[in-house]
Amino acid sequence: MTASRRKHFIKTFGCQMNVYDSGRMADALAAEGYEPAERPEEADLVILNTCHIREKAAEKVYSEVGRLRALKEARRRAGGEMLIGVVGCVAQAEGEEIVRRAPAVDLVIGPQSYHRLPELLRASRAGAVVETEFPVEDKFDHLPAAAPARLRSAGPTAFLTVQEGCDKFCTFCVVPYTRGAEVSRPVAAILEEARRLVAAGVREITLLGQNVNAYRGQAADGAEWGLARLIEALAGLSGLERIRYTTSHPRDMDAALIAAHRDIPALMPYLHLPVQSGSDRILALMNRKHRRDDYFAIVEQLRAARPDIALSGDFIVGFPGESDRDFEDTMDLVRRIGYAQAYSFKYSPRPGTPAAGLEDQVPEAVKVERLAALQAELDRGQARFNAATVGRRLAVLIEKPGRKPGQMIGRSPYLQSVVVEADPGRRGEIVETLIRSAGPNSLIGDIIAGGEGKEHRAMEAIS
Image (cartoon, one colour):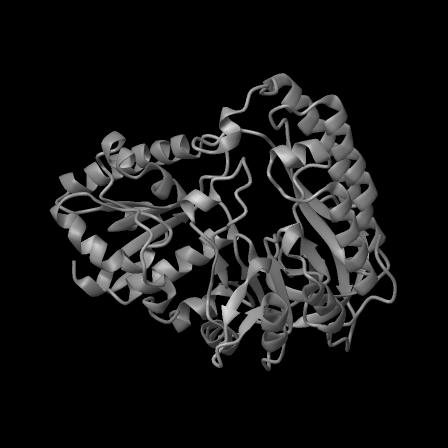
């Protein structure tokens, strides 16, 4: 098989940043003559881009490798070759242990070294390669430009990593150990990548970072820009209609960023702002370095700046030492905030994190009960928010075909999925849409004839 016809298959686990990373790995492989495969069975190289946040993440990777090992052996018997790579946060955390437990794996690469994928791939032919050091060089400086064909095929929305790593050291979290310290990309590099995305037809960009609102990037004149200033510059790009960012930390919601929600129409009125717990005692044990009242104050300022803003969040139940009173404090915070959407998880110990060694671990049955109660409350809040959009006009960005012929699916400013009747040729358009019904996970609307769908501020808050 010639180099130009080699194929790769990348399976992505976890967060949006891993989705972005997988795309950039595909760009690096394209420069080496690799094309994407539809299925792992067709690939000469299979990469598992892993996430270490959730419970039993490593075991799921070993299980996946076990399935790939059979494909690799079948390929070998047929006289061919299949290489297997494990990259990302599980690779960073497990390192040599992956090769020891799964000899079928040819290379293990941490999330800060995937720019070296081509050379490490070549080296793996002489034996398994493990690269989990945090390199001195910035990987973004060594990656090829995104392939235009990949960008065009991705559609009207795109992720763009602007910041990596975290310095907060929450006691439950592995990110500082797998992604390293907070690092921000230079302003010029971000703007150039955004221009390429817009030229390929992207109309909405989501800025990514483990702690994205800690962004402190260097501009061409040496000045340091915060996230608000970066958003302002991006909003000036012709053709870029919408900007989002995730994931944020309450400690980094500064006045400039709050004002950006008021002053920049392209910045969507939807913010993912995890709090994790509504109990001050648990927040202290988590090392969140903010109190519940601090969170309430930030939300109050955001809603004063942008009355129609909607909030999303993350919650952990059953953190070590969490009492019934602590859990009720979380339920109280949820009711008072009124989330448009939120995610809840049972606490599970991550090896190497401080919380894993805490005493007073909460029984599994209690965690299950609390998770069910919290998720039910979050679901009620989401249903109320969705119902409040019925009868309103929202600007909807058409993204992809729906399940039925003649249907298209788009996104509202609040990141809701909206089903409309539309021709596939309208993909990438922002259309004014009258919402006529709301379900648990999506809205149904009618495109208003002649409505250009330019983003406009709601006349009143949705609550």
